[in-house]
Image: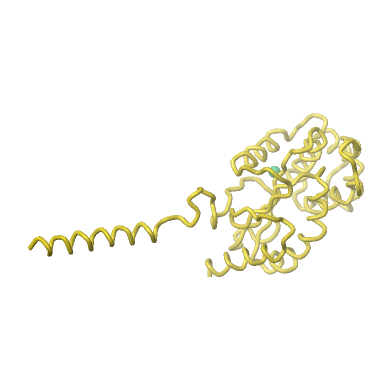
Length: 220
Ligand code: CA
């Protein structure tokens, strides 16, 4: 009788361990692997309800962000955004002081007033970033942002944009972005998250592809 009880108890214990093992999160550190970030009022390129969400935490003043936008991003767009697999969002990350803030204010103004022109303004901002800039080279001022806006075929009215930037009209939205930076413990720009998982190297296109493919498979 005693041994029968022992067998039952042992079975229960092993069953409990099995449940524990199978429900244990893959990453006990608490990262949000496999779950999209909740983004309100952020620019989205591609289908809103795409199965995979890629988010860039970027800074218009950051040389690596310009480089990412011109090298990795076009591959992402061509392979995954255009076909509806991936939605892409950009969150302002202010790691380079006042110029980062001014550019972020401008981008939020464009996103609010002329959402259709957002991505061309975004690309044009990066194009205007001088190559080989040193951190002391000031290229982002309210007037310079107005001039950049005037380079677009349509969209923001330069004088309005300068006014929005000078008056910090979209400061609240910039603060919303900063809260996302803090919540997600973003330490570098660009930081690229695939369904909430931070890519170790934003320039490792193969790793980004693999992460997207894995999410597509899991979602299929
Ligand atoms: Ca934003």
